[in-house]
Image 1 (spheres, rainbow, N blue to C red):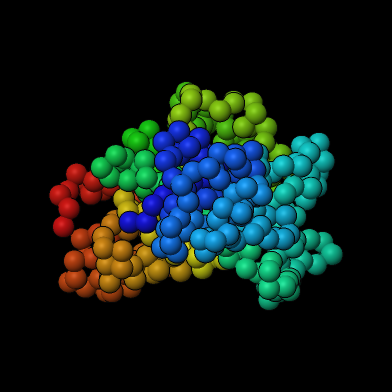
Image 2 (tube, rainbow, N blue to C red):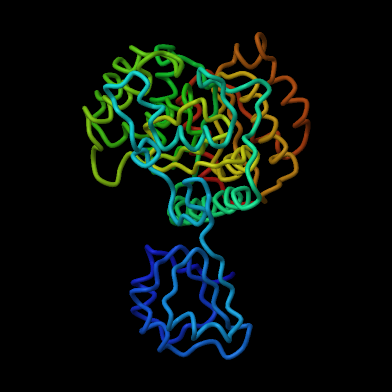
Length: 395
């Protein structure tokens, strides 16, 4: 395994034990305040020991010391306002920087919206053009976006370590329609399910957007609060049922500030949205957000990290695509594990409107995947299936 890069968050710990400046990858650090110290450390003796400096600022002494070693220096890139070499996941306050709750169009003053506008074409009303079209950019900015997505993946991997076995209880993804309103019964059911899973130590992961994704992240957030808070939050949010309703962001903003963060260290959940669908604002209840430019990277990765299972709540084309994308991963054991696929809603998935279950059963056939596909109306069944999978011996 390659050595872990040194980041702004880990530099102090690295410096406390460093005895040489060899074979280290420094990422996104201003090294100028440490120039004399780093230059005085033993440097690389040959190319194989050379350091790598990614998006770092080097002082003159260190720059001179590494010049003869063949060190790889990747400069910061003009990336249209994004940090191509970020070393941590996003948070709501960063994506929503600039939001004014008193402005009806406040979302369009945020960092998140500005990045979307620079990435995808929109019309005069701010709606995405059809078919979707990216804003043309130069090679440097295109490279920066790809590097950004790679950096987000690295930060995501670091974040997930505490949830993966044997240290953690695992990751469960919840998928479902982006347009399911907040006052729909299934919205509240998914929120309660996510709260239960979160309180059992699991990380609930979603696509990070509105609808069922928001419901699951809301449930994760509410795990840090008393039981009655979730019902109050759903009732308050229902005043703006969908992301197209005036006040959709404002109501969520108010809920977050009314109830506060809750118990320290609790209420953790993950959102994995994309600026490709940036007209759908990211929901405000995921504690950690891995936001990508490339939707294909984001969607495949979201399903891949859900090693404890995926719950498919009602949804349409996007959710159905995700069902069979996950089925493909299980069918071929792409990531070395077959985990539960749970369709929530018998009538919805078994008959009309979308008879997905019969096709999924036929696909599974008599393969080992068959033991991991489930359909139910009961969220208690979902928890029991996930618990049973966690308790089963590997292999």
